[in-house]
Image (cartoon, rainbow, N blue to C red):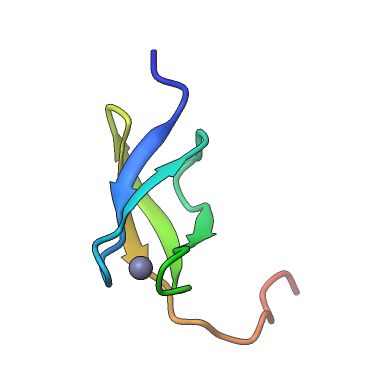
Length: 60
Ligand SMILES: [Zn+2]
């Protein structure tokens, strides 16, 4: 099995390779610096969605 996942930034279409992640995790696109959230993982391919950057008020 592959130990990396691949995906593409929905904004700038940069190809991304990441270590294994799980649904709901977020990463920052190295090109456009957008925050992306893992929406789904299908056979090593990430489905990424932009996340609105908000104040970090979660966790209360
Ligand atoms: Zn990007």
